Image (cartoon, rainbow, N blue to C red):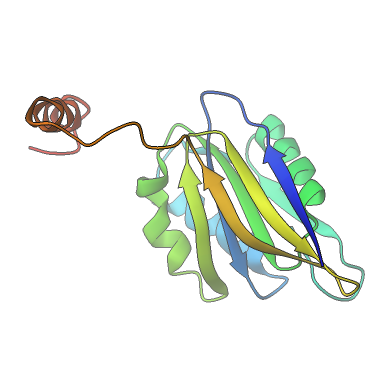
Length: 160
């Protein structure tokens, strides 16, 4: 087995969700889940088909994000993985709906951070082994850090 690290390039104003599912209708079902979760969400989704023609299947409502999703999925070329690029929403706004799509098996990450995907390649194909999501920890949260975190969550409207 060969180990590969594949960097996912994304614009700074985007979030990325990377996951695994099991069926060709993933693209349509994820599309529906996204548009039904957040009015005005902009997104592109792509899915790596794992049998038959083994194509990257894609959909979206934003051409740039759909192209990014297609290119990233093809760079991964790991069967049954999907990648979603979103704007005008945060992953936490759509993750519940995505997790409820019947063919979704797991979510590897949901982030605004730069990510690298660790892929294992065998003679049979590729699979995602894990994701490097962000930077190393720099320390332990202090009382001041706790106060800052709580203030930030209230400022952006996610806590009362």
